[in-house]
Image 1 (cartoon, rainbow, N blue to C red):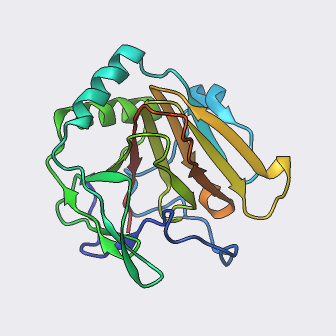
Image 2: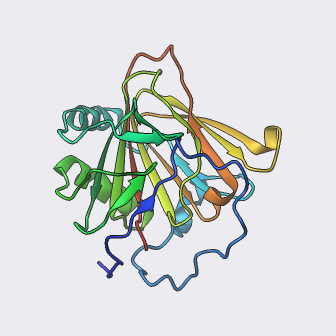
Length: 240
């Protein structure tokens, strides 16, 4: 793995730290990124999965993994000992998040913050996560060094409108379990042209890259009628 700068915390901008104004213009990440192993998806055979949205580069692959395999993965991931609810800082107060998370990185020296709190990062990947990551990397032709798992036990558990850091060049999410609504909203385009909704299917893969985070926010809203659980694995490239 190419050398990375160590012990610098990057904040994954999730639901507790919303961006209310469009970010200041900045240059795109250059093609000569010093860690060339972390490239973006370019395989033309994946173009049939591309989603047409302005200012975004998105792929959605429903049914990529069989329902039987997704069920086995969900059961194994649900028993991980690394699940926990982080304590977040919200308007100066400490709040325990309702959504459970678990995080892994391939490099022991990598750290990151989430809403002001250091994430409990683990380096010994369980076989089930290693298997999923390998399949995702093979499908996309890219590599990842970090995965964040989110656990939504019912439709009452959600994640608010947010955008991830621009340094996340490729974000690939595997959805397991209950179908949940995934909403994207453009920062400046109003109306139907600035809104997109999906039902993320069990066994699906959703990819965001390019300038998507610069122009769009996303969320998984509450859906109280859903009583089944969902686990997502979001693979990222922590490139400093």
